[in-house]
Image (cartoon, rainbow, N blue to C red; front, side, top):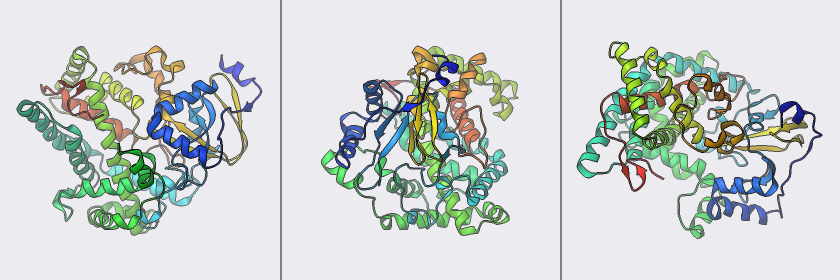
Length: 465
C-alpha cells in the first residue's frame, strides 16, 4: 500500500491483548526469556495478529515494573516515532518499564534517563560533545595501539591452540581503549589495575539483569534476576573505585563541565555512565558482532575489504587517517550492515505526549496520551518491506553507492543514520565515533595479512553465541 493510501485510512486501535493482570505478564516474560526467545516472542505475535503495531506485555513485568503494557512498533515505518521527542517523552525510560536505582549512579538521574526538555540534559549532552571534539585526534592512535596488540594475540592463540576467545580479550582491551581515547589515562596504570572490566561488568549487570538471561535454569534465574532489583549495596565498592579513577583521569572534562554550569560530582557520574555503560558496554556487544559478521562473509568479500583498506592506506602514505577511512566505502557499509543486524541497544521506549496516530506500512493506529510505546529494533531494521528478501542476511555492500539511501532505515544510534545527534534529541552523541571504531576494527583485520577468519564448530573464531 502506498504512503498516501495509508495516510487516508481511518485510525483504529492496535490489535493484541495484555491478558490477565499479573498472571499474563509473568507468562509472557517466560515466553520472552525461555520458551520462545526475544525474537520469536515478537515475531509470533506479529504473525498472530497480522500487524506490526500491536499491544503486548514486555519484560520484566512483576514485581519490578509497575506496568508492563506497551504499544509495540515493529516495522521500519512505525519505529521512528520513538525518535520524535515532540511526540514522545523520554523521561526515566532508558531501560523501559523499570528504572534502576539512582544509588547505582551516585544519586543522580544521568543523561540517558533525562528528557531533552530537562535543562540538565542539554548541559550533559553538550559536555559529551565537547569531550568527543577535544579528543578526536586521540581515537585512531589509541585504537590501533590497543587492538593491533589484541589481534596479534588472537592470531598467536589460533596458531598455537587452534582457538581464541575474542570476547574475553575484547573486554579488557575495550575498557583500556575507551578510557585512553576519552581521557588519556589508562585504567590499568591507576589504582584500578586490571580490575576495571570486572567491576564495570558487575555494575552493568545490576542495572540490566531484568532484561537479560544468563542461561541459568529457570527455577534459579527467575527469582534471582527477574523478580526484584538486586540491591545496589553489593556493587557500591566497585562503583566507588570506578568513580575514583574517573574523577582523577577526567580533570579536563570536569573543568569543561563546570564551564557549562554542572558541578563536578554530577558531571563525573554522568561521564562514568557515558564511558562505562554507553561506550564500553556498547563495544562489548558491537565489536564481536562486527567480527562475527565479517568472518562469516566469505573469502571473496574479505579480499574486497583487504584491497580497499590497503589501497586507501597506501594512498595516504601508509598512514591510517580520517581521509583514508572516508575512502573505504565498502568498509563503512560493512560496519553499518553489522549494526543494522545486531544493534548494541535493541529496545527503545517513549511515552505518548498526546493522543496521536502511528502509521505502519498498511494501517493507521490511534494511540492515547500517556501510553508507553516500545520498539524492538531488530524487527524494524530487518523489515523485508525495506530491505527485501535479504533483510535477515549480512550483505556487506548493502549501503554502497546509490544504495546508501537505505541508511535512513538504519536506527542503531537511537535515530536515523542520516540524521545527527543534538542536545534536542536522544540520538547517541558518539554516533560518528562508533562507526569510526567499527571501521578501525576492519582496518586492523585487513591491513596486515591476518588469518582470523577460520571457523570453529560452525562459528568464526572468537565469536561467541
